[in-house]
Image (cartoon, rainbow, N blue to C red; front, side):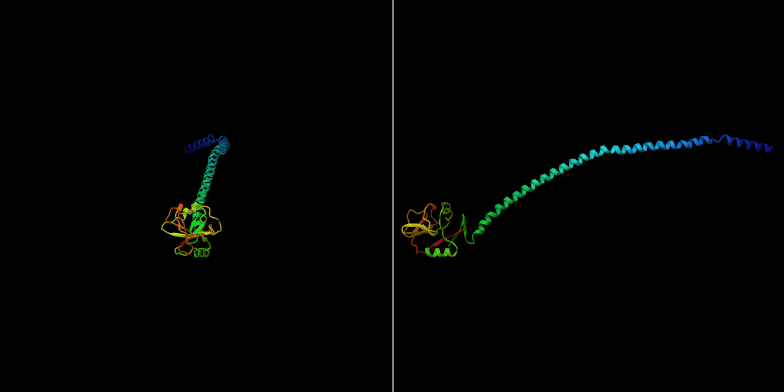
Length: 226
């Protein structure tokens, strides 16, 4: 009785094994696996293609800001260049205005005054007319020759001073030390007798010349052409 039961169980197990063998179906499932991989491969290709083609519009959008930045950079450079040129021009103009007065001052030596294109020296000691002329010649110039009204006005200095000028009478003709004839005169209404000209700084410039004997002593004005 026991052996029969055991065999029955064995038969049952054997039948169960035969009934549970799904060999063809399992093999079919393994063969179906490549289809799943193929389905996975296709979407990957689509993803790569979408990433490639999808990036192109973004690149075009990126190029537009870059082009705009280039134009802005060029405009800023042009503006800075124009500003630098304007500043350079202003510096040049200011430097010329600053140097010009210094150059005029440097043309005359210390103790000399600049009027027009000449340097003038006003003595602080007295000499005769001839001695004054020799003193001016030793300085490289001569007694002053007043050839214009503007110079006549410029030589009017404060203080009651009389100066020899380069004007002398020869044979009733007044001439300057450079041998030019007297053209424009500023004689005072009353003048003493004498053959040499004197400028009186205390009188109005229209009438501040008078005459004096050439041997008398007074101050003098030297003139040096630049």
